[in-house]
Length: 375
Length: 184
Image (tube, rainbow over all chains, first blue to last red; front, side):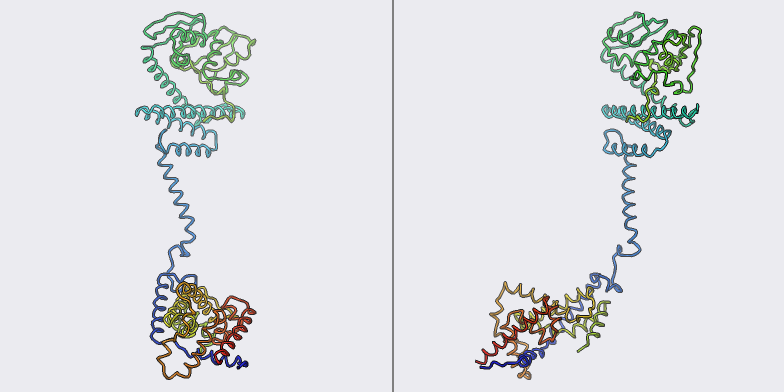
């Protein structure tokens, strides 16, 4: 038994393996495969990671020139997409899928309108657009959508009027009597728009009542604290007088006689006011009935004359002075001979009351408190 | 035999896309890689296929190769060969028990009658290596046949130098035992 086999002997035996060679044929075949694969990988650009960069084809996004452009390209794509949506939404109407986008865009524009004047103009524009949309929707018999448009327009109008009142209040604080020309234009357009809305509302109410009650006509003439009322509704005619010039009493009376709701009566009645003497209670009644105003809003301490540059404050010890009436607009100068025992009413009557042909006043300026906005 | 510096130049040129350098590397290492697989594979064709797979992997991995002061290029290449061998064993274990192939003569050696003396020693070496477990085979092949240092062998086998030393000691002990049994 041989126990002394050295490492050298083992090594000599094992080193004999080193004489083995790969045969020529398989060696050439493998070499061909390797070179072919090497060229394929190089052409495909798979041999990347910097070392083969001299001959490597690089993709367009790996180009140093284009790499910084990638975020810009992405931003451009997003911008184009957003702009396209907003442009597409511009002609949308209530009920359309993109109407929400249009409203959001309008709100964004409002948020970016820095001055109150700009905000008022923006609200006016919104109201005008809704008015156009309402007309189009009514033509296509989309009543619900038209009502939505009307509601939005009404809110926009109210907001615009509030903003204008706020601007005027600021002007007053600063001692400026005249509002800017642009603001006056906006106010004028708002008044026109408001009148159109009122007129349209009245026409709609007339049509509806005509279907319910037949031919309907309500006329009220107020003179010297007495109201002469001529009604035609439900095929019946009423002609009577009331010893009052209070609008609320007149409305209640008509509602009782005809069954027409007080809201509709208020929309429809035309009060011809032939006398303004001793009409403080009338005005107060009108103020209350017209604009849901709070009791504070008729407080003379508000300096309401400042809300309208055309206000004329005439305080005279003499007796009342009749003013010519206009069918559509009663520009009443309230001349008070009532001496100071009712300061609140005095101040309220100092306002120039712009009465529409429904006898409704637009005294929303009185209501405005800064920072309030209804949308 | 090229020096390591010359091999590194070949590698650098291959990394810059020179196909002739790929050929040069292949010519330097093809026989060594082939021998590494010869006793461990089912037959000569399998050893050739494994050799080819090592050089293909080398081409794909070459861009990531970085010259290291403490490791030769051959160390990196034999690491690839070792991984290929492990993959091969994993697949072959499902097909055939390699121990059953003991005694099969390699056909390429039978065609060269002038190498009879070498063939006798080769037969002894083949028998010894065949009876060793895979790790003993590898450590003996790398340290004695390829003459890698313990550190290089440890790197190729992904083990510590101490483990290499222990494995080599046990492998030699096993070889002695085999040779002694043969002499009986």
